[in-house]
Length: 208
Image 1: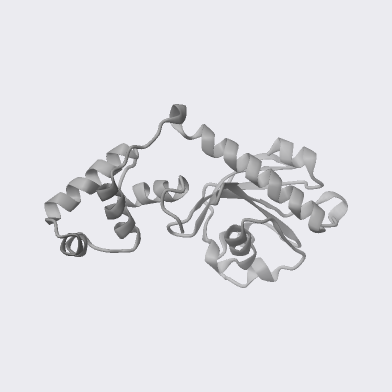
Image 2 (image 1 turned 180 degrees about the vertical axis):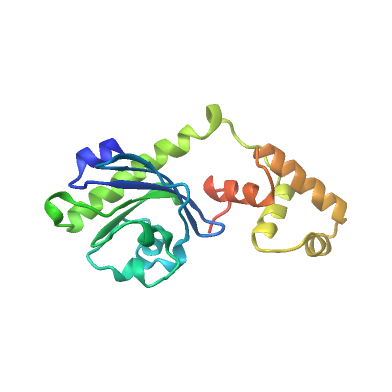
């Protein structure tokens, strides 16, 4: 984030992780004129915040000079906590997978010209940072050896199917389905089904 503040005419940077399974933005940490600020209490459904949702959906940096992108949803914790007169959103991408985003609400001299060239530079920055962050979370470059059956079961979980529905469609027993799920969770080093599916989304194994 320090590099981000040094490279661009911005005065703050709020770092969020993104969960594609729930379209959830979760605060991690912010760097402002006051120093580092923990923002782990901020959790928002980004589908309700058009500017962030558009940036993630298109995987491109977005900028708005108005409040409407944040204030049209009364439960947006970010807008409740920080004063916003203009904002920029930079998605952090590794390929087609968005793993997080940076939100900026203050700019040098109070104004900044966010033209196409600046937004393209921010988009490129997000891609470079996203790749670095994603690679750093992949332990020693370890490859996940998940079977076709395990992957099929996890895809069906992502679509909301129950164990009973999966067993009936795949022509196997419910116990077997549960074994596939348990094995996939273990291979992904996940805590539960939702965590495992989110990990598959993050790694681009399951596409949105």
